[in-house]
Image (cartoon, rainbow, N blue to C red; front, side, top):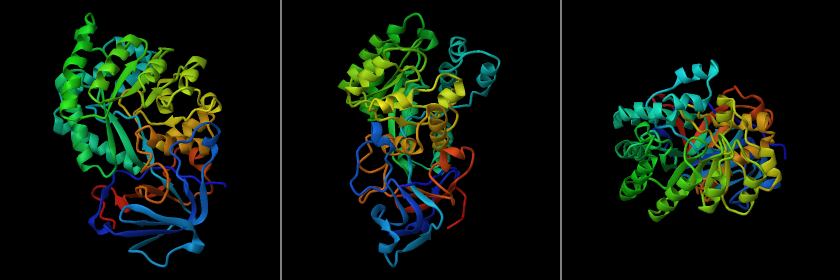
Length: 439
């Protein structure tokens, strides 16, 4: 059971009409990764190191769904389209459960400030950070935001991502939060991959509410949440529960209000300190608590008694120079770790899941098998998509990517800077970058 590796990097992707085949056969696959005959809903603890694979395999896709797979001895004779994957591996697409890809502009000037020695919090106190993105977004049109976010969506699809969550949170006003969520709705309408939307009005406290933060929380609860629910703009509600942002009590109040509107809880927690965010997330039945750079025994104990998923964002820790989440300790405690990119302009300007997998191994001592489980099956579970995405199983949606020829699974995190995606298949169709005439 020595799986192989894949990295993603294929550029933006768009369906070509010529590829609308009813069946696709991928044959002579060196290693078919996450091939499940008995589908799992999650991988946790020691089971995260178990990655089911088949060597010298085939994968048959019919009408966008996985129809059959197995050793080449049982390979079908024909299909509408056949791909020979000799020497290559096939993976289920990455499931990225934490992103902020709707934003108006990059923040490289803050990157330079950090190089000069300023911390993330110091930059935020000077009006940078989230408030900087909010100012720029408020001045941007919905069309401009949509076009730039669509480019980023295509970019991450090219990196192998086949399901994604997108948050608001750079609006920080009723009008602009709704604008962001409407952009996400537009993305859903044209996206070849599933998108989950999260309302994050409590991402920061706007400058004009600095001395009257309770009024802003009232605005979230009494105006934003009803408007989000009325337009059915989000599945989840998130709060940045951390030092300098929202307190445990404020977070609890917002999440309880969100629940009355049918929005499930997610949490930004413990990025900057032991904030209590994990515990309040668990108490509110959060689907996931994300970041967790500061996680101790109390946080792990709270997670052990819950269905809440710990989601680690190692590219954020890498970019900001803050501690990496204790993945090894979490896994050894029996928890189901999730990996996601946190793609955003301020603390993780990359949506490349393969790099996240590399960082998980290099900086958090996760085994390659554990990291792949965290970035596929567990990522799907963090978006409540595990029934259809995250592994290769009969009946699941056929979102996969084919690697270039690679020697082993371990080569994926090892070769962290290489472009190893040869082809992306979404709903059983081969996709190509926008403007690419390749059939």
